[in-house]
Length: 77
Image 1 (cartoon, rainbow, N blue to C red):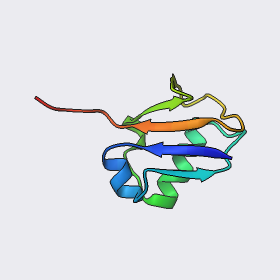
Image 2: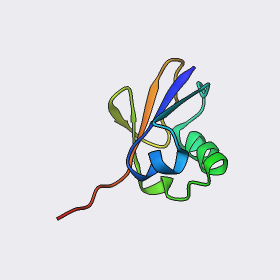
Image 3: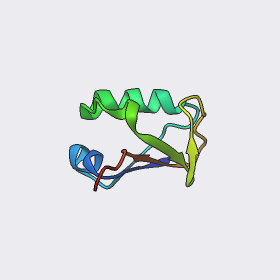
Image 4: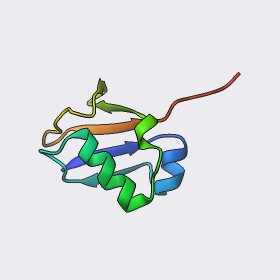
């Protein structure tokens, strides 16, 4: 099982701070596609992804027990 964490507008879109699903063996890109389809998220290509608190690429493979976080770009002034 994997914990998927959402921040900022993604948290609002999903309606949860985090979810638990089994995505071990899938790439980050595959997870993004799964979440985009399930929650109608169309901006996942611009978010940063972290696995176990380290930034990850779309090609990285998720392992059992990994915690994945999606962090949107932050703007402000």
